[in-house]
Length: 237
Image (cartoon, rainbow, N blue to C red; front, side):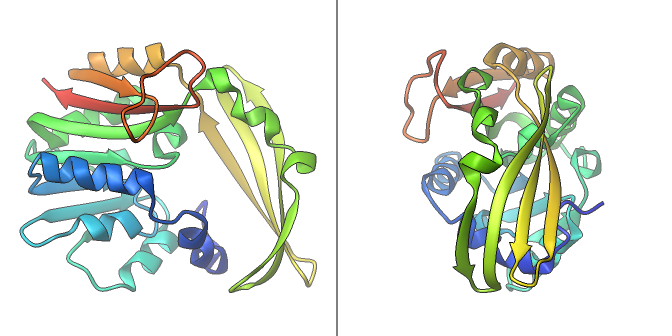
C-alpha cells in the first residue's frame, strides 16, 4: 500500500517539511565531492532532489510512493524518477553520492540488505549520507494524542491532527497519524519506524564496506549519548 496515498496530504508535505539546514548540508556535501551522479533514496516529493540536479549532474530519485512521485513529476526537472525501494537500485558502481533524508533509513526494515544495495551503486570512495534518530532520546514517548493534538488552516482546508502510539518493541515503533477534515473524514496513516543505536548502524555500515563518521547535527556538532539526531557520512571502501 502507498503510505502517502492521499494526494491532498501530499500537497502539504513540502509545507510541513521545507528546505532547511538538512537540505543545505546535503547540497554542500554534493558540491564538496564534485558529485556528478547522485541518488536520492526516499526522495518523496523531490524538493531536495530537484535542487541537486544542477547542470552536468545526473540525479536519480527513488521512492516507494507512486503518489509522491506523481507529485514530484509535476515540476519539470532533469531528475530520473523510479518507483520502489532499495531493491530497485541498479548496481552500477558509478554513483558519487547517495542521500537518504528525513526518516528514510528508519523506514527500512532490513538495513543490511539496503546498505549492500547502496554499496553496489556507489563507486569506490563514493559517499552515503543520511540521518537517524537516536533511540536514547525516546522521541516516541511524546507521540500521543494529548501531546500532539492540534488544529490548523491549510491550503486543502481545516485539519485536526494528532498521533497515536500503537506499539514499541525491540526498536520498532508503530504509530498512527490522524488527519481529520471538517466533514468528519479521518485519514489515518500507519507508520513504522526502526530506532537503531549508533553501534547498530555503525556495525551494519562496516559490514557493507563503509568507513563511518557521525555527528549530532547539520553543523558538525559532536555526538553524545543523549544527542537527539545522528548524521552519518559513510565512505565506500
